[in-house]
Length: 42
Image (cartoon, rainbow, N blue to C red; front, side):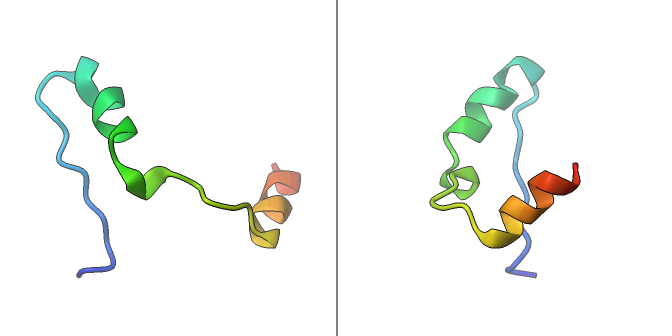
């Protein structure tokens, strides 16, 4: 399923954050109306 992103994490858990920071898929380019509504619900 090409629409599903899986992250291949290293064996060492101390490297997880660095691996995720390198990924562009988690960068937010803009905040949508849906994001704003979701924030208010929490």
